[in-house]
Length: 230
Picture (cartoon, rainbow, N blue to C red):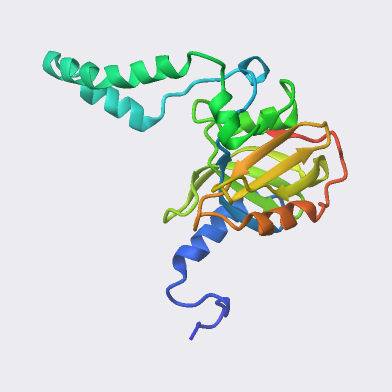
């Protein structure tokens, strides 16, 4: 039983859920209410010509820095490290031959469309591992937030990468393709669009997320677009 002054909805053993709720609440504005949250990434497919992408601000992930430091610490390690790295480099070179993105387009379809600086391209940039590296989404009653951090870690460690007001989202629909069923397509008011993948058990269903995104928001300024420094 909760003691005097405690929230009766908080039950013993739910500390992780409470900490996650508090971490999400810290990202929201006063009076802003969360609706859905989960992990997200750009769906596999053809993301369009690189010339339309936002310029990448490459920041080496910590795990990559640790692997590089461990593999190049001594000459024997360097020999082994680059011997193992050579096949990966060869595969990357071979995959770059021929019509670009033809196989990706055949399998996953076009997953991002819009000129540079469009809303879809900004979301693509926010979710890029070589950019700000957002890996989670939070839908509130005002906007959709893209966050970086371990959403399901204990305790959660979240940072806001960027957000889009709900009134800038013109359409949100489930977009299954072949075996990839957990996909949702966002169409923005500027005519751009992007398809997002929702991992199993780590994100709401495409239908639930689409309903939350289509529900409208309290922000009535159509020009509002927030982006925090990565």
